[in-house]
Length: 267
Image (cartoon, rainbow, N blue to C red; front, side, top):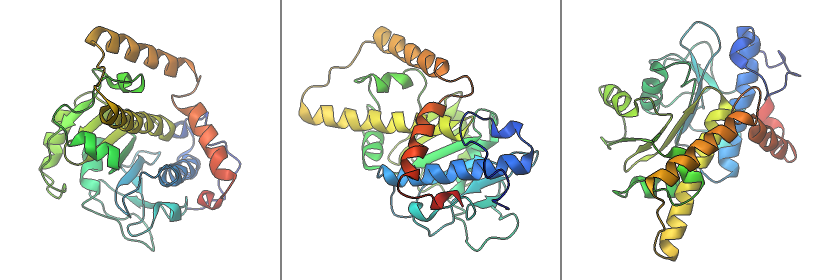
């Protein structure tokens, strides 16, 4: 991929899927590389594992994924690997991919393609902890209410090596764009990298707050009506904040934070 293409194109406030495919892919690669660096910045990594994937602009079912074996702070726009729905590498790459790790992602990308263009899956300490309790995520904070009535659950079947699991995972996901993989980790999707990242951030933060609150005292769980109202208000605020897409303002601010210390991810 020629990373000189669209080098001056803004990374937020733009629909990469409305651009010419090659130009859109160039911008998407930078967005996704930034997301990997931000996951590292926030301490959400588990060694080299977990994936953030994105549908490449154009008609072909191709996706970008991290090179297997690299730390998240080593991921760049140009070393992201392009693969198909079966995890086969498209074109040339100096790096392998984790085929088993794409089983979950391919299942989600296959359904409601426009809503699940980007899929982010993490194994964070807080996320795995809340995924390991029977109650799951509770409405105990403003940010947790963003998932009231919109959060799916999928029971653990092992480390997702079986392609047959894809059908069951999709059935459990339904219309949701966030999922708790029980005894496993968090999953969030979006129509864009900024949208998916904001959703993942909120889900991770909700898990952190729940654990902190439970450790400090008795949880003050909101009633269903209040939680639903709060969640609806958060949705309305997110939709109003940007004329282009959900998460654009937040992601633009985070990109500025990255650029203050390192711009290597852009290349």
